Amino acid sequence: MNNARSAVPGLAIAIAVLIAGLLLALTVGRYPVGLGDLISVLYAKVVGHRADVPPAVESVILQVRGPRVIAAMLVGAALAVAGTAFQGLFRNPLVSPDILGASSGAALGAVVGIYLSLGVFAIQTVAFVGGLIAVGIVYVIGASVRSRDPILVLVLTGVVVGSLFGAGVGLVKYLADPYNQLPAMTFWLLGSLSATGVNDLFPLFGPVAVGAAVLVALRWRMNVMSLPEEEARALGVATGPLRIAIVAAATLVTSASVATAGIIGWVGLVVPHLARSLVGPDFARLLPAAAILGGGYLLLIDTLARTMAQVEIPLGILTAVIGTPFFIWLLASVQKNWS
Amino acid sequence: MILEGRQLSIGYPDRVVGAGLNVKVGKGEVLALLGPNGGGKTTLLKTLLGLLAPKAGEVRLDGAALSSRSVRERARLIACVPQTHVATFAFSVETVVLMGRTAHGDLFSRPTSKDRMVAAAMLDRLGIAQLAQRPYTMISGGERQLVLLARALAQEPQFIVLDEPTANLDFGNQGKVMREIRGLASSGLGVLFTTHDPNHALRAADRAYLLRGGERLAEGPVSEILTREWLEALYGAPVQMIVAKAGTAFIPG
Image: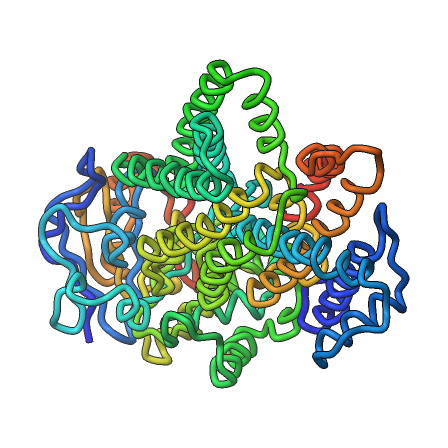
């Protein structure tokens, strides 16, 4: 389960989940599309001429489902990669990407944006900046408190600042117009990709690509960073600057996905663990496996969200329904798996 | 090349643990650090490793201040074998040993084939090559101590510092680690280790440094320093010395 020879089947499983997620997400829905039609539309797109299918089919695949599928993959991959990075950095397999307050900061930014009746793009920007600010505050406070355990101080500061931002969200919701604004806030806080269009993809892709590239480039150092602080330094790693780089990269990735899709919990907790059980803990293999698996996982969840009932079910609710029993199982088996 | 602490005051931001300490280890030499709990042994080790800044005085290595070197340069000169601990993630033994090569690569590099050869050679040297693909979390405490020693050797340092290398080990593994420490010195490394067992110091070390209450009680060749009188003064407790044809041993009386 942990050696080099077993990494290939693990990665193959992750890729299979992603492909299954892609096929289901593009074909299943209120307007079902056959596999043959899907293939001919995608093939026609690649070679650059018109496909021999009804225009409605092409439009459903390319305009309606396409952007949403890409967004789901990016958000799932982003949350999984950020969760993987934070779990390593905090040496704890039970932390998630919002441990340092990225989600609560983004949530406050978004509800303020909705309260001020800003446009969609402005709301996303405010949410993105809110996430960065929250983590920035946590980091500055955490770094200025003198302690022998900087990691613990950072996590506790994250909890405290996160709950303060949560109180801010509560206040804005309390002040909001209950007929127009409150439903929009609630919908955003529960997470959804239903409003995602082509224009949302670039603001999502840019930060996710930059953050993920930094994390992948640092993959070997991240292995060493998962050792106790002093041990990592004795091995020649300048832990202080490296921790800032990893936190910044993971926060960039998290904030961009929260700004696009709202609060989607559990993915960043569950997927890194699944990926670790597939390819082992070495970040060189774990990061790509988590990204692929996270993309496939959120695609499956999102397809479920838009097909299982007459109305769309918020993503955050589905991920919680799946995540909670998983987390309990994780707690019960953690002893066996990590020590 | 000498690792040396001069007139060191050691401690943490909020408290001083020891003062006026002069410590010296040369290459090919083993120095054992003994003293009661809370006497400052671990703090002194961390200071000599550069993990903790001295409150006064300085640590010098090869004639230059340790603080003038980068974290990475230090790691290529001094390696540390920490007390064994339970790891969070189930890295393979090979990966753990490869982490010892980190200081030989740059910020973005991955282990090279040369790094893998060095890691394999160190596992081989300690007789644990068969563990290479096992998860570090699934091996015994004695094996883990040897893996951490292999990781320190993979750093290809000039000095190795070990924090209670025999704690948590069974009787047989204690002997094995002591033999390995002797072997490190004969291969030219300078070695500094802490221990609670004077017998280990007697067997593996050239010199002993007795640390009590943050001050140096005595220092010198083990044959002169490890005596009943000094040990009783060090621990504030009666000690029995047993002399036999095969050697000398101490037991707490």
